[in-house]
Image 1 (cartoon, rainbow, N blue to C red):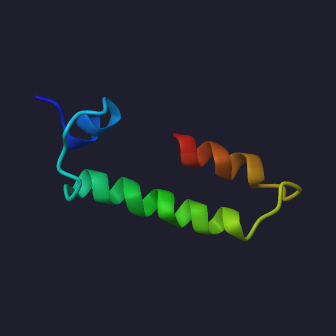
Image 2 (cartoon, rainbow, N blue to C red):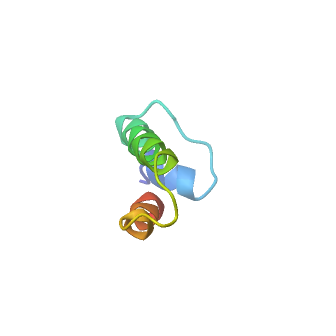
Length: 54
């Protein structure tokens, strides 16, 4: 049986209120907020982008 996160990644119907999906959402939201305070010249910019897509 697939997890809700796996269903989401496969573009199938999923329960977005599952703990796994919500954790992923809040993680991405936190990283995006960090990116908004950075410029492309910042030392950690590339690592932050990589963190977002993992």
